Length: 311
Image (tube, rainbow, N blue to C red):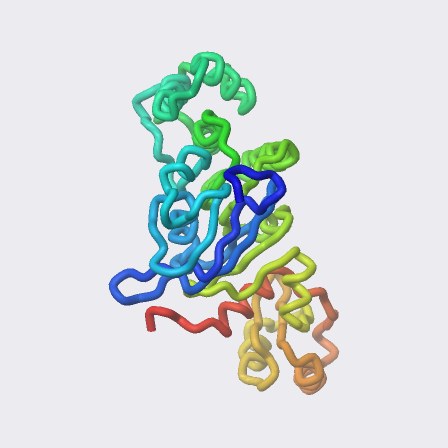
């Protein structure tokens, strides 16, 4: 495979594993991501998402496994990978005592971007930063810092974006604008691997993978992930939901009972057993409705079945 071959996967790894102090934090993960794809990487804190991303972009070396990123070997060609990847970390990592323009110019220098001044100008225009270009980064709100971080990731025209919870702490309007930009970039052929805790964001990805305790538990399109869980879900509304939840959790066949506003979502993998439980507790004061399991229902269920790698 030649580097950056558009006919080949951008990410193609098998059995990628990382251990720290004898603990396996990323456990034999296989993953393939294609050009122009937005791939959502989900999981709870401490599940190994960031460690996996750092191995993909050349910041960490896997202890086991093989594969390529942008056509380069993830174990032996890390320097080549770094030059063609844009990596946006969880925390804002640029200089708060420099202006937006100065930060972008500094990053462009690091990557030896040709025609640096023009490249900085294009980045400012694309992310709507021109009017704020002379504002200190430390004075920016979360949403504007996010735009600066994305502009910095793009300044060297990478072929792959690795975004680690980029919208944490950002208001809904800024999140929507960010995702519109990501879809625009993907339409131009840029590949994006993004970690998020937001279920609505996950649903905007082309494909998803769910990681818990270092292991990959589910992957595929949204429809495929939902179908593979084989989770039956009911919604119940009415009085005394706290007491009803306690009753339901004590019954065999009920895997999870989760409050959603003024309702409960009641789920289980055995549809017949779940319906038997519901029939036993039904009363005129509560309204029961069969529902399609959502991503949050599925992922809570997956977490319940996952084995803690630090226990």
